Image (cartoon, rainbow, N blue to C red; front, top):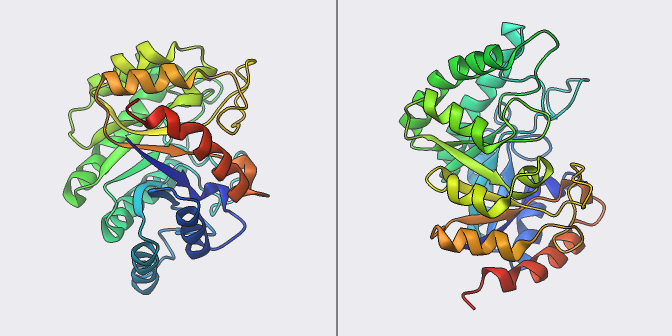
Length: 281
């Protein structure tokens, strides 16, 4: 397993500065935001793509994921990460999310990244059933997954508390409805903890789907607030034991967007805490 750090902790600086600082902390990988102020696909031109690739090369670091979940650039007043969603009753708003995801897949291919992550549908509107939401999600995903296959990039769905897909069972329901090698799971450790999933068993049940892992801590209250690993209640020994048991060889990316005032300090503390769990000892 390899350790990465997401640039969503560096939303007060440029993508180039964020990449260099993540590399300086000793991380092997960096997750890039397909969002402002980093790499919003709609405005990231070929010159900037080449500049990002050069910064990655000079920093001797790899891209572990492109995060296409957050959409601050749209400025939706309801929630800057969740909206526009895949399951809105308004088709035009759904199309905004769909087009953003398509552009992010292309951006990933241009940058040499092998995957992007997206939200698990979005929040259910009042009067919309789970089945209606899932049907809209599947309808939107299918053509996007065709695009993912054409680009050679994997699309990761990331279950999250309060959104359409929160649990192991719900992700497996989604996976049963879509046949595409490009559909995989971004297993966010904190999110599954928030919905009271036993983490070791969840990892084992989802083993064939896990392509990327997000890591953060959560308080014992299970309130969805990302904490630096070691400051909450998650049993990381259990988490990494399960990942080793399924022979997971991919990226574990630290995601600490609440720490934008001191992303270096948060990232340094997180890495120190997690390194022992990644070792073979």
